[in-house]
Length: 408
Image (cartoon, rainbow, N blue to C red; front, side, top):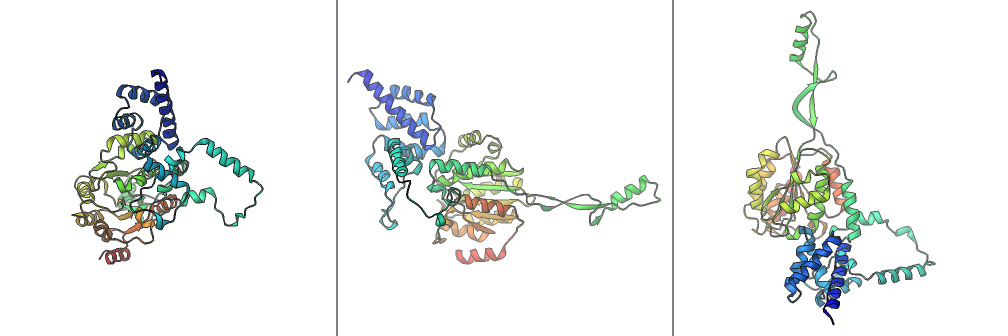
């Protein structure tokens, strides 16, 4: 085989691999393809690890793209272990037959690796069976299936539709009374100063009664989101949700934490969601790593609590409670956090399991200091959350007592 044919074959394979990445959701265009060919020609293909990181440097520019690229690379460039697991996706196996420590291949990668000829053949078979009648009395619409599907189980097309649905979400404004008053003829309280000033302007013969009413304004919203490895799939969708909320109302402050705390409020203010997420990816250094919840909350309480938790802020803590430090110092920091805000809502994806039990030390340390404990793993849960945030609410002593009893 000549050098020219060998080079053409490599370029063809790289082009097919780029198409797979694009189908899986990565932003791969002709420019990236040319860069990949040039990089491979410069580095060579003698060492598989060098080849992997060469393509990684070209095609991956955000933290949330690493897992998809890794799976697509090992499947496309023939890792037999992953090929067997991907083939197993076409035949659902009972849950009790799943091996221990089974790592599921992303549906987005599996669909991107499908041969279009196979898909067209399957479509042809379904068209040839068009005379079959179905009873639609117990079927669900696509929208209902999408809203109830777990983010972790979504395909590329479903995640695209989910992002569009999240972008359309609007947070109802929840007004709460403030300490300020404003003039109002129908107010329930007399404004003595304004009345006396009006009397002085009229010579004092008549004292017109001025009234005022208490101003109302929605409280600040503060979000603390866990971006550790166990939360990676969900944190991507939560960023879409946080971007939609940040651009829908004012006084929204967003922080990400893993092993360190990062304030991303300024980056999410950008209207373009793709540009905003790119800036967030560049600012965050500990994506998909470990979790030090206690230390990160300590940094927040020390540096940001007095700045953003004033005026009765509502705080959302998005985390699964799995702490690398085994909950060291977490209880004290949660207590201070809870005392500094109007309402603390803990959003935990693990609550989607009916058999969830607070066994982790981190979960046990957090539970006594929350006002509400809710699951957040699909569009339905996010929609419910927007409804909850739009309603007035405060401390719930009965729920706190319940969590204290469970944690004990």
